[in-house]
Length: 263
Image (cartoon, rainbow, N blue to C red; front, side, top):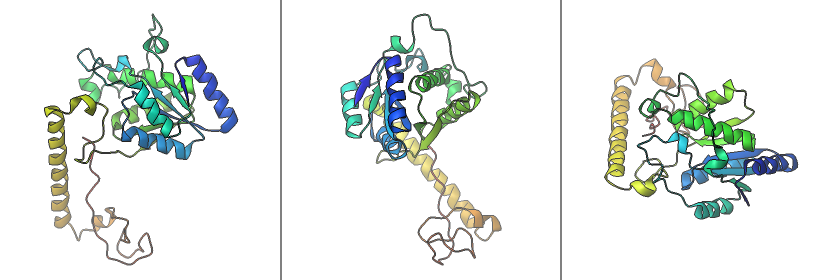
């Protein structure tokens, strides 16, 4: 595995690997890797010929009162984890390499960057789209892998890729969660405190609320025709009455609760 800090060198190596071996898959990260990141690496490994990862704590997506200085950093440990997963290239630039002195260019997705959590974090998504576009230009991946956990970020990056005609496919992978149901996060390394426990409580409460709403609506309209279209599980259960099951069975149709949303 090669660890590269210079953008020009990284571009050269990525192009060389693309020519020699085929499709390059990129997993952009800010380090402090956990099983969620590794699931993205494994997805990249299965769909790409060469896997590259970036490790860069991006200062321009942090607000003035946010946790940039406290964000966990352990490049040696992160690289060891990536090497065990078979990653070929790691791009770990310095801030000066990514943002030369006097840089004044930004990438902004108008009409989206100031919505959802972007409304409470002015400039956050501008920082995200700027750094992601730079990573795409440096590494030139064929595919880039992101977690479903950051749904707003993924939607904005997809729009940026579409609007700028960038030749990269955005691959969205499932959420990996803690045993208590909260999505894995690098910030957990320094936020296992009352704040984290509060997030866990909110997640559990919200999950119960979703289930209760589903159960009430399900019992109230069980015989209604629209219930036939509610997705069912995959264990030999019919999607619609009168249709065969996915695995050829003939069991009765039944409901399942909706997917839980990310908290």
